[in-house]
Length: 423
Image (cartoon, rainbow, N blue to C red):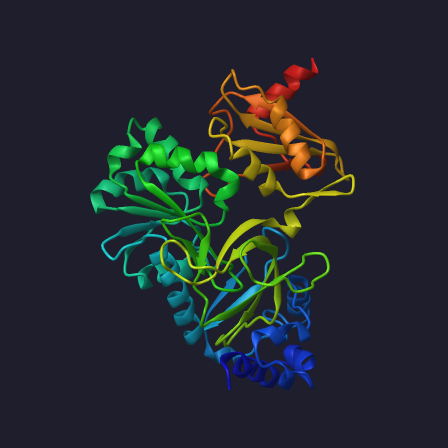
């Protein structure tokens, strides 16, 4: 019996939630190609089940006394979901994440400062343990310790940082405020998570220059595996490390129909756990939109690679046109003269144009950029220049989209400019 068949049999025997879905159908699912015979699982279904049967809902498959840890998802796109871990689940998570961190350039001789929030979600202690599994030595810094960390980097011989893409830019600013040159502190490598790098290319380039260090992205989901992909040094795509622990599908985000896995194929990522005991997922629609490559990478690895292009739940609907914020960022990233940017969407429903504020040198004309955005994304845009360094970088995640009708606070530079233009 294959690992997929064993997992499906386990789900049917262990959970009333999955038993109902698999009854009479499980025997017909022998390979990953047969998974479209089964219904999707959505986050809203998980939330509904957990409201009715807290804390885990009817899809919990392991007895509660076997659980060694409980996490909740970050809740950035809605009500958080509780996730249970057995000891085997924890060990699998560490193995999957450890391999991803090795691909992302973490070495056994590294001393890594872990700078994600340790509270509740799996990016904290679970990723800490995955970093240990990579062979590195880990310093559990967490968030809110920026000043202290600047003292500890040279004292403890810290060689790498793991955090959001925004964090090392924020930390560099705090270093300069303290009269320190970030590049003189001795970091060699920075591993990022939680903010896909394509949409923040300017921040990434700024980080590499400030710290004199390489910057590489990783990918994970608290409810699948906390880190399960890492970029190698040969390209931007993320090598998946879930071969023994998940089946990966791509589907059309509107129809849900399967999309063949081939180079350049685009769609929504769907995950089915293998060898997961406590909170396994079956055909889980992640809402992540991305592309996949299946050919051998220049680094020599043959595992599938992905690039995250956005999320279904981040989509901006502008007069019947769907606009994904990361698509805006990807277009801006083509011009190395441009810095950070933010998008202001007005009205609910959104009234065009979408207003893009982008850091740019004074001589950079932006009329062509508005046309480029409109031609590519089929919505109306207004692009306004800000002086370089005008937009803030947060310690955790930097907000890109601001919806004024929903009460979002605008960056100070944008608010000041809008008041000036309104006079």
